[in-house]
Image 1: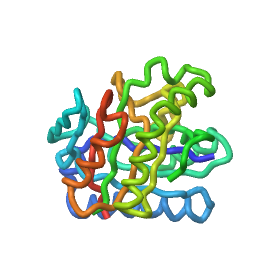
Image 2 (image 1 turned 90 degrees about the horizontal axis):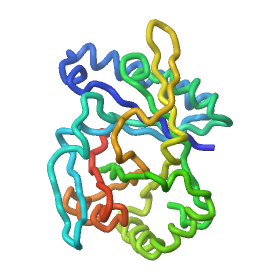
Image 3 (image 1 turned 135 degrees about the vertical axis):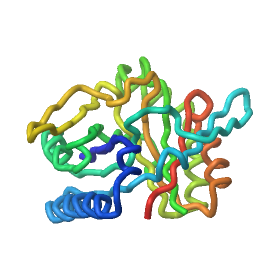
Length: 121
Length: 118
């Protein structure tokens, strides 16, 4: 079963980090990635660019509306995610708690939904 | 450039529907999804798409002072929640916008495009 671990954190804190602080944070993430990979639970993961670089698209009455910025202005924004292959929700929660972002921000864990009738990408 | 297309929608009653009904409703939108998948596949054969299960299945994990705190989610208390995402490699943002507008959920929700940090 796949679970998405969505990492929410304070973007302003991140942008205020020094080079050393950033390097240390990346090293923590790399260590998590290595552990998860060695345990065979890592199925993917990406860091997202800042919400300042977000573009939001909506279609209303056949018209495409494009706005700069994220879907919602929030203090703690989605900054990245891991895709975890776990036997159970409990196992996914255990791994989520080891993600560095869980220690200052929050990690939302959601099961990946698979529609049996749908074409899978 | 790799982009994440984050699909936000009001899952409302949808999440509480039995799986059979969800599949039926989805079948009605299926032709639009199928043509979107074709377009995405043409743009990037290694495109990844993931749909997330409903609001009621979300948990939030935080660790403070070494203690693990698990609460019912989702984390963001908004009416619309993240329902899925595509990860796709595209030449530019304009192409990402064109494809985002083809996502059936763009008609009732929002598609947020974010560059992926390489």
